[in-house]
Length: 354
Image: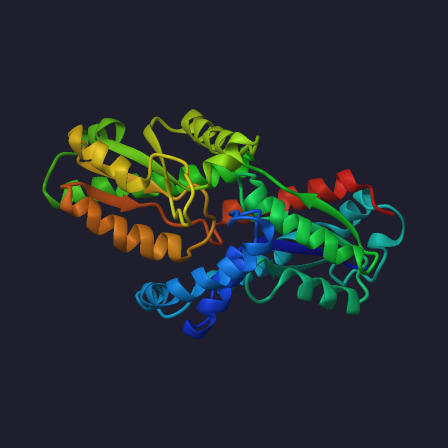
């Protein structure tokens, strides 16, 4: 019998009409943000969604009228399913016990699905489909590298609750912020972005030596992470620790001068600081003129990269006199898919299903 792998992500509106209900679903989750006492959470979420929908629609119009996250996550799922099922059947038999892997060799052991927390395909609907296909084991893989109860925690809890209704056995992969292949993928996109700075110098007829000097010293990396309410971290959430842990591993592999900031805050509470705008202002005051921004919390393009960074922060940096570039999102980067494959196979070994 096949094993299901469910890639867990936030989700995003697939049309302008989906924006208001998407925002309502997002702000209804108290794990993300607490809007007053529990009984007011949903009424306030509905109010916020209504008030913000017009502005949010204009933002999404600038990136094509919808979020690309479903298409990208589906492509990640397809790439991962192919990579997983390329493993030799004899080897897979050694790490799965009993009848889990005993099927005709042409039949794939793994089926990879996409489960979104706040928009279609909802996690609970995906689990229902898995159950109807007769699959009795699920590996949940959070696509948030750094664990937070607001992201990985909320999605995993939703998946586990949905699976229990059908008696489906689960094992979860909640965090992988220092996985070597994930770090290698980050290093690769950073090095590629550094080369774009060198290419810019070459276009100005500058020497190769000065290009190397630029990359090693003049370009500052700004790791931009998704913000969280400060209270969540103060209550013990490891998100900031995990984020810095990721950066430290990158630093071991490539010489960089780096800074950390936070983006995408929303709601009337105190959020992590400094904001990305504030940090860009600080860098400009310090005379930094070349900045490479790395969206450290995100493994696929979404409104946070395509609008906030590519449009909002890029324009803001230009007004500050900063030449800013962004690393490519990991999306279906081969090293990233290899990292996900390794995580799933390790989870399978550890589960000892049979």
